[in-house]
Length: 398
Image 1 (cartoon, helix red, strand yellow):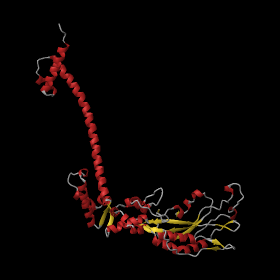
Image 2: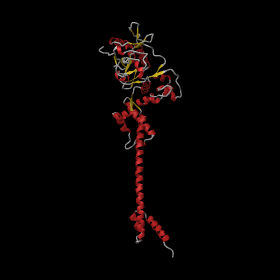
Image 3: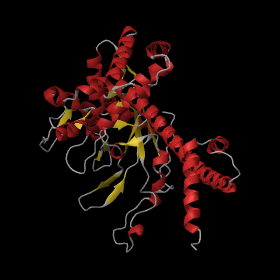
Image 4: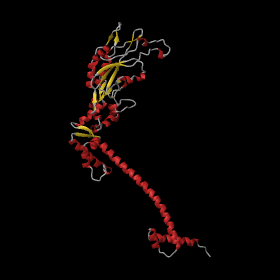
């Protein structure tokens, strides 16, 4: 209750429907908002207001979390605080506008009224992975609707505030848990989810087509060339995939293969024991890679773990090593080409020198000259014959 509220003075809150300019129809104070905040992790509820003199673009910076309209039905960003902006505008039968701002005592009473719905929300919202990331469930979304309904006031003719009675609305049939969808369609499930990494599951859930259903059901049905009838909203996409993997892993803990093999003592030991001396993963065929993966998985089982993304990780390592070999081949080919060009120039120069020495006709044998030029004797003999032929052709006839 130690909250101070700063609503705008009454002279700044008005509506003139006859004003010619849109910006002149409302007083500068009508953009003032009071709000309730709910911590979806622990269930704390508090309230406050915004600076009515600030621009509407600065609204997000003045509230401690996200309004429901700013989020979809998927994962909720940290810190997991939702904000209900309270409506202050009422209109009578003549469509005259009036604004009612609440006192700290009234907001405190409202916070107490929504606590049952907040507790239901906190109890039913999905918590994903070791970090406990939040994701909407069908029941949590329904509980938030009840909070919004409870916070929607009306005024009596005398100006007294009336709050709706708190309610606990059953989750409607059009709100579907993805986990229930998987249970109803086991043939559409992908067994690879059982050994997928967190990133792979998240990527699968993040399916956003231009039309039709997205998320896990949309991707499943697209792969099976099936269609879901319209009118449903799905909740818990990531949570359903994580739960599927947890069931597939049984009592063992899903653990990222890369992290375990590179950082865990048992993982590094398994890697060193399995790696043949002097061998490169680039030279390992698919069958040997599969055997390597099986060995790593067995070592992880003994630690009470299941390695996720193992096949992908090993294939990525092998691809990286093979890519390095490819680059080595490119560098070697470039060096060979460079040396061949140098060798070509030296061969040309050597041939000119051999021809020059042969032209001296100083009595040395072909073998002697061949040894000087590091050439076979036959090559020098052939070269001498060509020079002799050339001289005979060039000699004048009498």
